[in-house]
Image (cartoon, rainbow, N blue to C red; front, side, top):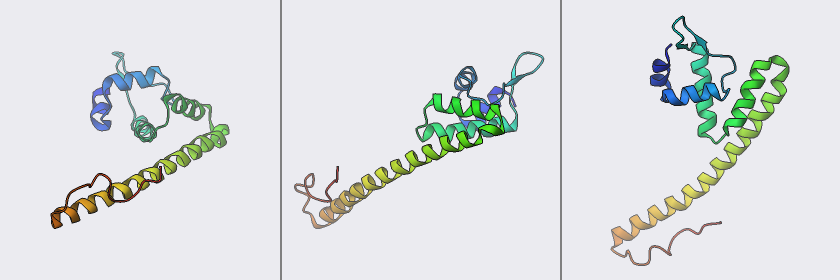
Length: 134
């Protein structure tokens, strides 16, 4: 696949794809054709999609780079890769819990507003409703 095709499929810009390559985020070097253009395999596209999930859930680029280096190093690095992913999973779960707490407060406010609007008593809404823990 060309860089443009990969960009279209993943939603990553061609600039981002080149940056990821420069930063060593691929577990194998990206091949080039006779004209010097990048040629991505299906596996590399899938890798990019995993990287997108890791980035969108807050994994820093240096940690993704380390993970890619470990993949390139081979099967002996599986325990370390596992640990990187396990720690990140824990962080994502913590963030989900934080967001769930925030959503409950927001939902409580939405319900309060709906009731007050229906009743025509929409005064002091900013201070009424569910309390925040932090």
